[in-house]
Image (cartoon, rainbow, N blue to C red; front, side):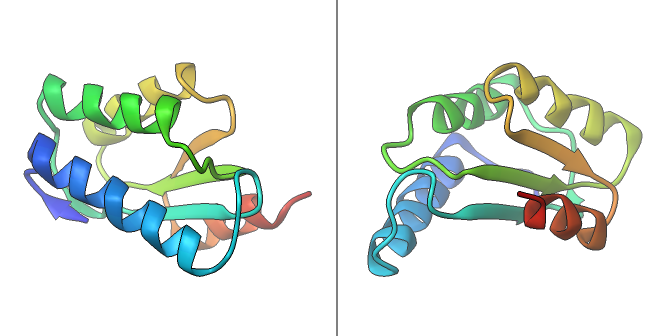
Length: 104
């Protein structure tokens, strides 16, 4: 994901993510999610609220969610979502995120 997102983009991401989980035959807590948003910018409040709703209300929830972002402001914005799900973390690199996701 990258650039300036809309609420519709977040909603489509949710639809695609949930469909992929179902296609793999997985249920809640049976998968991890890595979201790489290195090309993303600071998002509007309504977009961040849509992500918060996605984290809180997805029918099929990931065991852990790792987001990779660059830039101090974008990381700060994403870290606010930790309040929504304690199993959500923000990382500087894909390697750091993958290492955390692979922890039991």
